[in-house]
Length: 130
Image 1 (cartoon, helix red, strand yellow):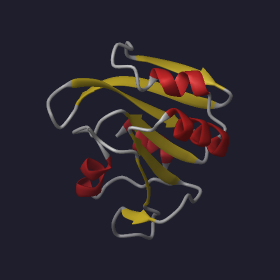
Image 2 (spheres, one colour):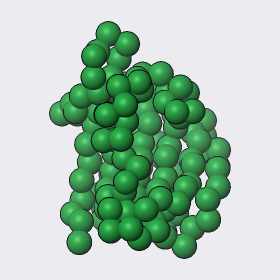
Image 3 (tube, one colour):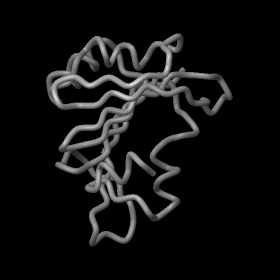
Image 4 (cartoon, helix red, strand yellow):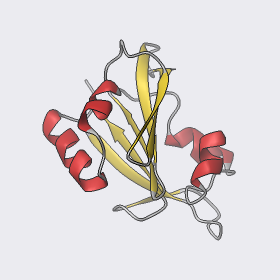
């Protein structure tokens, strides 16, 4: 069982690498793994997100889709966990951050983007396309 984990990552144009930071900053990537109901509520309030759409991101029976709600885009995809189980991963794209949410550690995570040395979290649309 994976415990709740929230990490913040940032890479600006002047930065050589994607780096882990201690707290939220505009333009960062927020990575959330295995949150409880209370932690989901906290994330919802802190980042002005929709609770029901976040809960869908933790439902492994959820179908891939894209939703737009209050100037944020919610993208649901299917990914493999590190245990090779098919799980749902949600990406929330806003003007100020990227948030990834899943109920397990996936093979498609921030570490993949950390290795490529191409992605800048402050260029949110380019990161989404990549």
